[in-house]
Image 1: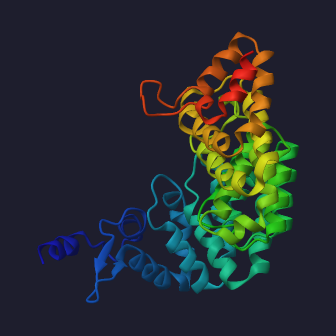
Image 2: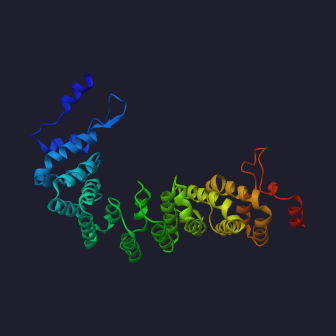
Image 3: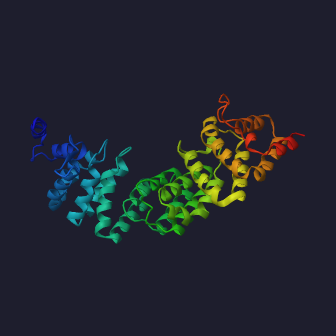
Length: 361
């Protein structure tokens, strides 16, 4: 009861829209409440929707407050904007003002604009596509296109536009990282997502990692999607450069290892040979020591345990012709995961004894 008394004191003046927006939409002081059945209700989102419904009959009142809804932290502006667009049916003028402000503000928060686009998508896919084209038609708004695309069900022609924009230099490749979040690609066919990721991977080394991340998240937790996209996953995981300078995120190597771990069991020796060549090629540049110990060595040991006799010759030939830098990396790769642990095995201990002796001779 004491908490409710405090909340009543904090309740905004209904005649002061700026105050209501700040307290109910931008930074509400309460978030969840448990109902009688033990379920949690997002009270902040519910209040934001109620205010949107109230204001939907005359949304022009909001125009002067648009800058307020585009700056800094915005906890409920997506929910507010989405419900506003759904209820009002016509947010053309409001969205036009929002787009103008987005083009003028440095580092705006796009949640309100995304909420409006999401609500428009609910009402009319044609209208949603129209506004996406509006973002593309204005140079200062092109950078927001990937974010806006995630407010509805993107199609293959949207993905083609992303690739075109990246290739023309109008869009940074890392801007499409947003396709990794919130299952925004889950509705796409295997052919559509594969075609996009493979084309993205061909742009440059960093784009290849971005493509692998998007495909990894698309298939995460869904074995059917993994099987459906196995060919493209195989191409992507063997294409990325393991040199640390080409990676984009800390999670990159985790995604690489997880995909490779699943594939080497089903794809056998040819795939493992490709992975070995990929590792050897990276030893010519700069491998990250954390990547070696946490991701590359564990995978290499697993592969050697199953297919050691078949894939060892690739390493043996590379070692013979290696320079001092490469030899240093090969030593790190082939020794035990923890050289101070007596119980751990090195790669050599996983290979037939006669094979190693003959090689040493």
